[in-house]
Amino acid sequence: MAKVYTIRLRAGFLLCLIGLSTTMTAQLVRGDYLTGKSLPRQDNLIRADPEIWLPAGIPDIRLQPDNGTMLLTWQTAWERDLIQFDIEYSTDNIHWRYAGSIVARNEWQGAEYRFTHTVINAERVFYRLKMTGRNSNVVYTAPVSRYVTGNARNAIPTLINNQTVTLFLNEAFETVIISDMSGRVLRRQQISGRTGRIDIELPQAANGIFVISLWHADISKNIAYKVLSD
Image 1 (cartoon, rainbow, N blue to C red):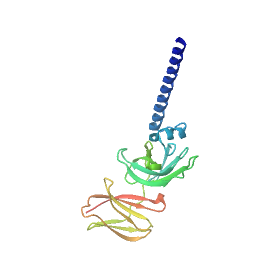
Image 2: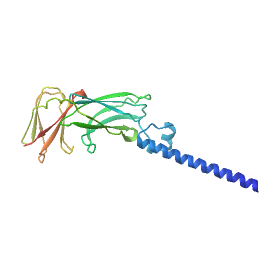
Image 3: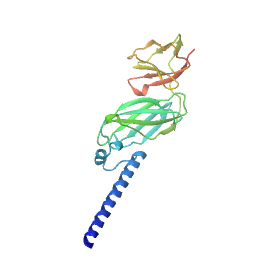
């Protein structure tokens, strides 16, 4: 009886050790996820717990200011079912706005990406990446910031009269987006490269300061600026 009792005691002790080890591993993995560090043994972790799934190795964003623009570059260590990157920016690290998107290459060995953002009326800008993967899972990178150097291009000549925004374009933009200062989109219009005078009607109740965003086929030529309505 004493021998059998000893065997049971050892088996129970081993089971306790295995349970403790599993708990510590799960806590370590979840902590790594929250801090953005690379996760070990990705295949096993993805199958075991979908909540800690990542679409790519969390990249570090590098910022390079240049004459009113900010060049963002980043390198992923690996990618798995990654759909796209959304670039978001902020002037206070609290309220975030959309700057643009880049389709992911979804390469197993990772890939390098570049994005240029034109900065309007800001001395310091914060940036973060929103990574979207399978089943619409989303992961954000930690914010990074730099001070802006130089001045952005002059704003496009713009008039607002009788709830109509009139643009005078000499460059071929694809889309015009008009939003209020809270970031709410009031009008989005495809202009498909048209130049010259373009009129866009605003909602009847719209007034105050508007943000005009012009999207170009070359994302480095995107422009955003503020105008005041009558």
